Structures are given as structure tokens and as C-alpha cells.
Length: 80
Length: 409
Image 1 (cartoon, rainbow over the protein chains, first blue to last red):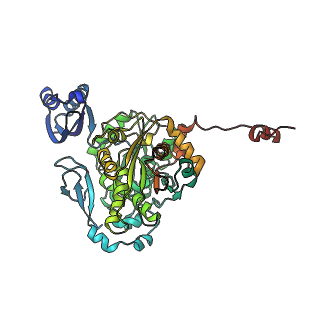
Image 2 (image 1 turned 90 degrees about the horizontal axis):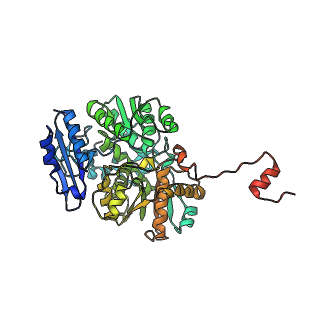
Image 3 (image 1 turned 45 degrees about the vertical axis):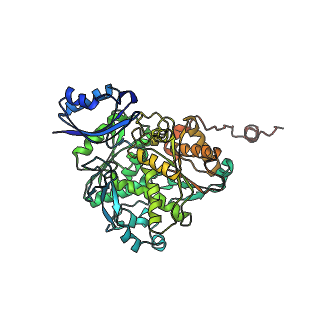
């Protein structure tokens, strides 16, 4: 099954939202958190998302629409 | 190579075999090369280094690939120049410029790609690849050509013609119809699907080690000691962390005294997640969408940003955000005082230095090195509106009138 390793970075106002829980319920994907650091102002989560490619992409787009940054685990590949 | 022990996760410390992998399966942390410093200490000395080639490969005991296999077009041992004119301008009496524009493809990327390409050969890859809007493209294309490998350099199709040609001359450029994010995504997918040596994906643990050589060279060229300050342009943060690591390794091996070097982050206003995190006292840079003329620093999601913030804090360094309008000013100031035409990233560094000197963060007599990572000839458009010329008729009269301002009799 295809998977993506990504990092979500949450805005302060989204810290209390169950974004990952909802991602797993709204879309046919399995989320697997590996590392995270969240406090009252900032938060990021490194996780693996498994599912059909289209479903993963739709899910990640939904996360972006919720106001969270979605980045490749590798950081930006395109370098100067 | 016997000095290299494993790849080790920077987060959880798990060890992995020396393979073309870059992320910890357990915690998804980045992998870094770990060395047997006890073994290295038995073989390395100031003399053994000085007897080596005038390239990064003089430090091969501390690189993860063999000098015997090196894909070498002469990266490294670039000039460290005393910058008295610029220092006088800024009130600094002990200022040095590490001019990495003097590398074969005119940027520090030759250091990292030389190591990545060598490792790619050792791993028996037949294709080396990268995605770049500038310096990395030229370095990868050139080293791929030297290694006789298939080379894939992915460049956004709307990039300036000069930059495309600068890499395409080596015969390996693929233009991608798409924006920054499109190229990132394509290359991430290609990196997953193909057995290619992607220099800053699966070769990243090895590739990034090449930047340590700047730290080694600073220490060696200063007479075997570390400077008090180093000002570094930050994109992904890899260069910043590895210059620091290089100085630390030299101290660990007894080649220099323990460094008290303060590491300073320099970023442009249009892409400053790392400097911003430092200034705001946060450990984790928040990703941004880059919008800066300093294209070589346009990394909105910096993989080593968090580690860079940590080092700046640990060393008593700083983070500076340079207004976009001061980038060309910095480039001009360096050119007019020291005769060095730097890229926009260098303009960010010089403007950062000016601020640090003005604010007293760097005292006048403290030994300071600024890193100039590439040449301005690749980014001429950045200074098009800042540089003035005069035009005369082909007569002495016109010359006197326009240039010398002498009264015409």
C-alpha cells in the first residue's frame, strides 16, 4: 500500500483540533505518528500516512484547508 | 572508509548500515554519518592533512567516502582572505572572508556534491540526480559528467536562461513545466521510485558531510584554531550545522583547541524561518513560502532548521533577518571594498555582518569569518538596478567632461 511520510505544522489556533483523528475518519487512510512536539502555542507532528495515492493526496489537501502546513519529511528538495 | 561506523539517527540514536538511506525507520529522524574517532585520531595529524591534496579530499579521514575513488574536479581549499577594507568600513579589525565562489562551479555545492557523487559511485548507482534553481544544478551536472554517470538535473522551466545554460553545458538538464512545489513533489516521487542517487535525498547523509570541510579549512587556514565568530547564510541549515560539526571534530581529534566560536544565522526577509525561530526563542522553525531575491536561500521548509537554531543558541550566536533591500547593498559593499562579486546569499551575509558589528554583537578585535558561498555572476539580475555606469563619446573631451569632471577649455 502506498504511503507518505510528512510533517504537519499547526497554527496556534489549531493546536486543540483533532486534525489527525479527523483525517483518519474522513479519508480512507491510516495515520501512524512517529514524532511530535506540541505545546500551547506551537505544534508539529511527523507521521506516516498509508492508503491509495489519491486518497492520501485528498486527505493532505484537507489538512492544508484546515490551516495546517503540510511538508515533505525531507524538507524542500529543490535547492538553490 | 574504515573510519566510518554507521548511519545514526540524530533523534533516537539508532544505528543503520552504510546504505543509500536517509531517514530512521523508527522515528523518521534524519540519519547522519557516525565515525570511529579513536581510529581517526591514530591516523590524522596537522602534518598528514598538509601533505594531502589541495581539495576537500585532504580531509578524507573525516569524510564518508574514499579519496581513491573521489569524483574530484577540485572542490575545496578556497581562499581565506583578510578583509581589511571591508573591516575598516564596518569597524572590524580582524575580519576574514572564506570565498567559496572560487570552487570549480563557483559555489560551495561542489564540496557536498563531490562527496555525494563519490558515494554514488561506491554504491554502484548509474544515475545521479538533483532538483535545483541554481548552484546545486551546476555542481551536480559537472560532477555527474566527471564521474561518467547518467545525470538528471531538474530545473523549473521558467528559471533564468543563464542559470539553465550554466548547468546544461554539462549535458544533463531536464526542464520541468511547473512551479517550485511541483518540482519538489515530482522529485520526491522520482526519489521513491527510481534507483537513482538523489544527492539531497537518499545521498543526503553523505552529501551534507562535504560541508564540514569548510569548518576544517577555516581552522587550518587561520593557523590551526577556530575563529570567534562565523556568519553563515542559511537555507536548509545543513551548511550551518556542518561547519560547526567540522570545528567540533577538529577539537575532538586534538587538531585545534576547543572552539568558542559563535555561530550566526543570516537569512533574507523573504525566507527567514530559521532566524525568526531563533529571534522568537522557538526551537522549531515554522515553514514559510519563500519570496526572496536570494534564490539560493529560498528553502521554506528547512530540514536542518531546528538543529541550526539549537547550535546558534548553544554557541551564543545570533539570528539576523536582512531586509530584501539590503541584499544588493551587501553585494555592492563587498565588491567595492574587497573585489569579490558574490551571489545574493553573500549580500545577505555581508548585511548581517554590518548589523552585528553595528549592534556590538561582534567586537572590533574579535576574529570573524563570513562565508561567501557563491558567485554573483549567476545572479546578475539581482543587482541590475543597483549598479551605475557612465557612457562617453570616443573623445578625450567627452571623457574629461563625463568621467573626470574636468573643465573643458
